[in-house]
Structures are given as C-alpha cells and as structure tokens.
Amino acid sequence: MRRDYEPVTDRGRATKQTILDAAEEVFGESAFDGASIAEITRRAGVAQGTFYQYFPDKRSAFVELVQQLNHSIRRTIAEATVGLSDRMEIERAGFRAFFAYVQEHRSLYRIIRESEFVDPGIYRWHYTTLAAGYVRGLKQAQADGEIRAEIDADTLAWILMGIAEAAGARWVLMEDSAPPDSVVDELMAFIGRALNPVGRDE
Image (cartoon, rainbow, N blue to C red; front, side, top):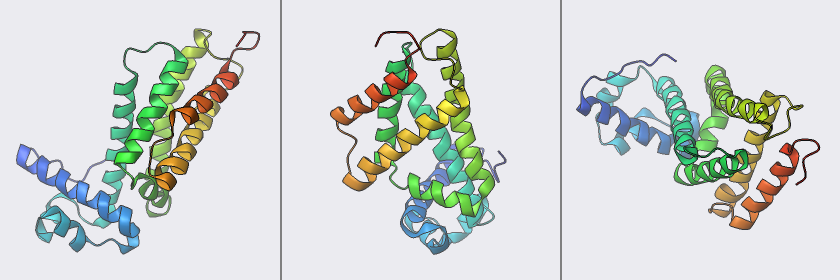
C-alpha cells in the first residue's frame, strides 16, 4: 500500500507515530466526519503545519492508521503463536491475543467499520490481508490432518475471524474486559468440534 511520506530520521518517525496515535484516539471518539486535524495535532502536541509534512489530508492519515492497525494486529498474533504447532493451541493463543489487542486499542472497531465508507479499498484490504495469513495456517493444518479438509480454508478463515470479532465486541466493548476463561473454553470447544476431522474421536 502507498504511504504518503516516510520520514528518514528517528525524530521524524517518532513525530509521525505521535500523530497517528493521536489520530487513533480522535477517530475513535469522534468518527471520521467529526474528527478534525486541529484536534489531532492538539493531542499530538504538534503544529497543524507539521501534520501536512506527513499527510496531505485527514483521509490519508485515516487510511495509514488502518494499515498500521492491521500490521500491528498481525504482528501481535504472530508473536503470541510463535513456537506453537497444534492448531487448537494456535487458535486459542490467537484469540486471546486479539482480545488483548482490542482492549488496548478500543477504537479499532469503530475505525475499521468506518473505513468501509471512508475508503472501501482499505476496508477490503484490511480483511483480505488478515484472512490471507489465516488461510495459509489453516491449509497447513488441513494438509497435516489436524483439521477437517472438506471445508474450504478461505471460508473457514472468514468464519473464525467473524467469531473472534463478535466475541471481542461482546466482551471488550460491552463489558470492558476480555472474555473470561470459561467463555474462551466454550469458544474453543465449539471451534474444536467444527474443525475436528471426520471420523476422528473428540
């Protein structure tokens, strides 16, 4: 994905990140239409002119924020699942990592949902990029006989992403906490039965 301006100095990168962090807060609170560059720069502690050194307009900052959140989610889940080989262990660790990420980035839901209307292309990119990595792992698990192979891996990835997103909304957004262990256990039991290869005992 194209980025408008990539700073070459540590100071420049830090300033740009400060602006994006502030943008995440403001877009999450006020939505895209209600957010202003003036408020973003006020929270970032920089002059409005500094904003335009990195972004030509509010929309470009929004799009780059979606890109950054996407990369951050994928990195967080990858780090949480490194070294794991059992597919259900990977699912559990990935779900927990996602819930923890949403707790830290509560604006994620609103920003991603708004991206469908602000920039449909980045909305599609966000979900298809998340799904692509998921599909690779599921295909490998199918090849290894860990999960049932008769379900298309792409379809399965979108189903599992939907479960994680809905559970995160139910608990993190509505209850202000990660799903309790009992709920995670129930989710994994449900997913385990759905993924269990035909003919294999549970």
